[in-house]
Length: 293
Image 1 (cartoon, rainbow, N blue to C red):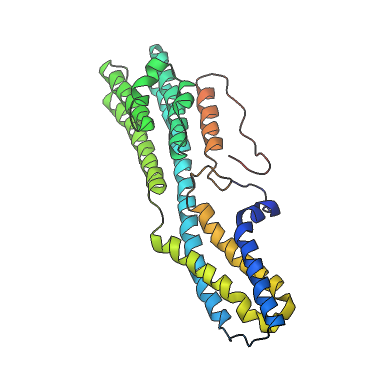
Image 2: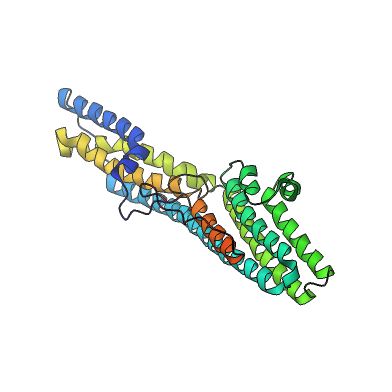
């Protein structure tokens, strides 16, 4: 996630330079033909075209941002539920269940890191084994959804604690509800990751933007003359940037600079939970060149 108040110009150029260069070349071709082989350019209703295109791009950007913001909200719930789970394990389990308290906390830290890797399509075994022994982690790692396997294992350990008489059924229900909240948050994240925007939101704005950029110099050349490449390219940049915004935000777990900062939020959970059991915790993650990962 970019945390600078003003985006870097290099970042903007890096994302749109290819279509922008193509647009500039096309503008120069149209302008050269108009100057050396004069023709009467058709009068195009560019204002009408631009207004309709802006509506398409606005709908797309709003839909993409809604997905991004929902993803951020779900991870906020994950942070809160993880803290609550750690607090419940620490306060509800008896003093002679310290090993179980520690296991539940470490499993939750391993869980959020495994979920982060799954959402970003990255290997997760190493992240899980940072907190759990191979014997503890192996049943979950053998499953297709390792994060869900870790959560199931935590639930079984809570049930074992109830059967051992360490907690009563009311306390078990309270902890289980926290696990349900965590599972619901994971389900929402997986829905966002696995469900793309409808094809109309992805295809039509891109198509219309390209058509508009092709028509733009034709409609402006008689007014701007030799300055057409500059004016048309600047106007095209605005629409291409709006198109890029939707592309950037549509997948909030894509591991790009526009991503929801999953690594930083997992580090927050790791710090809070490790400190809750008295273990040393790492430092919070800091932005790197204006980007928080």
